Image (tube, rainbow, N blue to C red; front, side, top):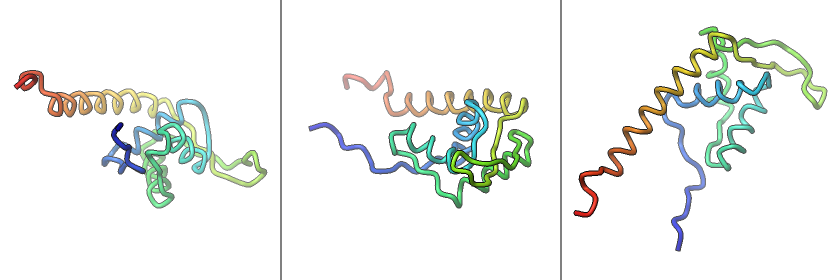
Length: 118
């Protein structure tokens, strides 16, 4: 029987910024769409709650990694649209590099080469 996947996975501290920056690489969008994109792309394993998303968006805006403007959503409602800045693109590269190094380190610990076959 295949291992059952968890219904939802908790985000590690700091990963939300990376996920938001990566989502905005595709173009400007509003907060609800960012949250839905992360959920859909992660096959519903990650769900970003409003109480986490908007403080993160404000933090990223304060750092100059994203900018925001008011516009109308596809449903005709006024919404704040976020876009990646040049500084945010550079930060995305740095954050992704850190994530890949961390992921590699965890994989090495979970699957140690010298322990196989013992």
